[in-house]
Image (cartoon, rainbow, N blue to C red; front, side):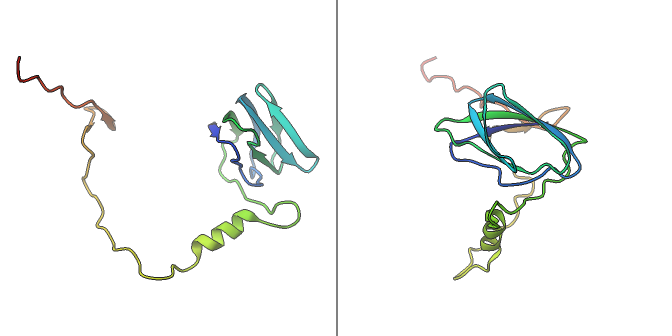
Length: 142
């Protein structure tokens, strides 16, 4: 199960859900789904149900944020990115740019922060670290 927030202009890229079926529900705002049968506006409350192999792209074309809930069965284990209509695969192009060798000097290597814990974060007695507020300082005048 995924709860996603979408800023204006944000999109998923064209993808399918591997062997998983799913349902997408818009909880707040409006999203646009681009699929083989064309674009579809999805307002708050709208749902889309899909079978394995269904390819689409979801985009927030609005000027305000949106929120959606995604449930998959079996649980989502893969989400192959696909070329957009017209053959352009923006995700692959972005990945190729990011994988290109860095030009110029490299930044210095930093040693790992083993055992480092930011101030105010202490391990709970029976679980993972939790944030606790720092102790209050008493005033000098009492």
